[in-house]
Image (cartoon, rainbow, N blue to C red; front, side):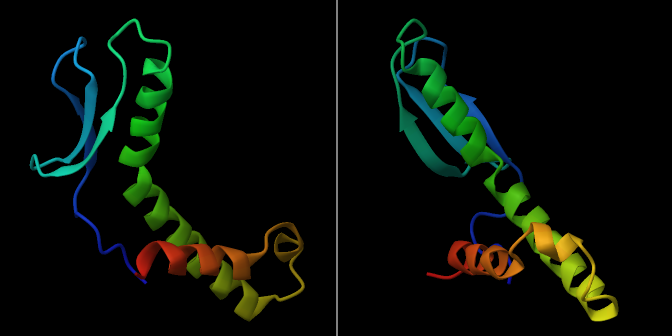
Length: 103
């Protein structure tokens, strides 16, 4: 499983603080998505900024989940009784990764 979306770091790019748009772009300037929000003083502006931040971190979070899953598999092979496996449902983790990497 691997990320099949736009490669590279995703960044938040606003046209200006008075714009009604927040763009998520690749580090090469390719537009990934656009979030419509109010101007700087609009009450929903902060929600849109936090949503944009979360979206911009999606590739890194997915990669971290993949690495956690791989590490858990290696630990399971050596010690299936590890209490680590009582805390997290790794089948759900793998399902989430699958949902994020397959159309």
